[in-house]
Length: 303
Image 1 (cartoon, rainbow, N blue to C red):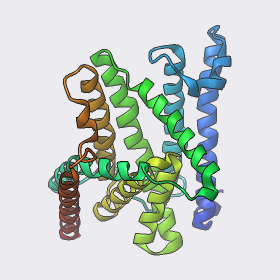
Image 2: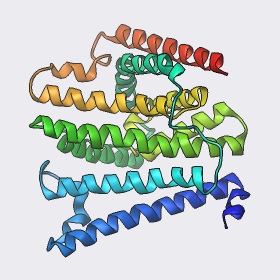
Image 3: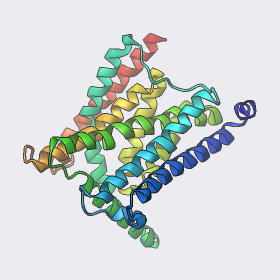
Image 4: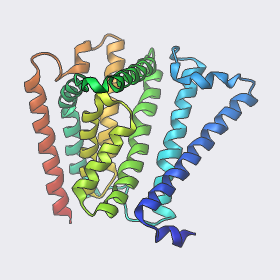
């Protein structure tokens, strides 16, 4: 079976990996549900788990466990199989010590890029579909409201321990797991199908953004996906996109925490998108471009 899978077309390999990922995710979620039931918990609440209102109740923590099941099953398992069972070329998770400067430059560029991302997100949120697609527009806005509701519940943090939990669940786990699937598995498979690195990177970024089902933030996530894709392709390592992903999510969690304890002004959360701050967003974009240029040049020197 292994030899048949190794010789199968990339699209067939991708379908197999995603199917196994879905099965693994379902198995993990099912095991958690059974554990709750055996513990005497009425699991009927899981049917409406997306309507969580209490940030520290059983529903909220159950949703977080379900997210872990998705990360491990749907994201990590396909990457592990891709690297072991199929033994196909991909980006490694390690990075050579000589590339430490590259990692630091990329991390700094990602921090500097946040105002540009905020500006792009604000522009994206203001887009409206033509009148003929008003029903789709309504669904998109309703979906966005549901996601915003869950984020607001998740980002309620009353203690430093709550901050640590969210940094782990919202920043670290997605940074590692999502990059394993999208840049570590999907991008190499798409490249083998299309034979064009730029098309593979942008198509993977498109699928990355589409997967999140948050269309009012589609374009900034598309751009981030492309940045992560080029960073992985140039460096040959998933560590760069993982660090960039971690920074993007982690800073959002930190800002939410410090705004909640009134240590920061709420305007910090939308830096670059506030009125009259387009120059800040432009400078942010320039720093990101410069950082990506350095990453590429250093990657070429390492070859």
